[in-house]
Length: 175
Image (cartoon, rainbow, N blue to C red; front, side, top):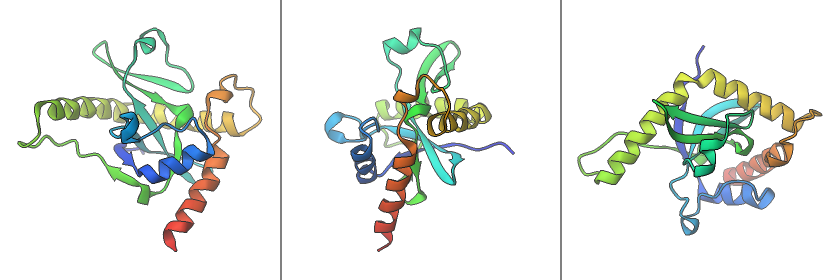
């Protein structure tokens, strides 16, 4: 059965807590201009945890990079639209997620309409490649948490420590 993916924003306080555990967790802070960062999810279940993968805007350096185990280019009609950073995926529970509205509304300004159109193209690409995305996420998780010899392990988040923080954070939300 094919996984259907969506785009989400993640609770800023939750991201801050994860960042305190591992400073490679990507920011969603308005102070850094990253409040619009979105995540692809819910992508994988690794070790009984749901994970979301951060989606980033393309940078010049990405043009020269090739897709790899921990990195994937989102290219449509020869144009680089964005990148997925599997090494920076985060454990998540539904209460930390807010689905991104990709419907264009009459009241939307032109830049918002263009952004939503870009996101719809990226999401279509992600859903067309969902099997590959899920497989890569599972492989990177296993390589970074097991005894694998993955040479990019130092670029990966500490998934096990983040899972413990996910549990701690969510227990606090229940009380």
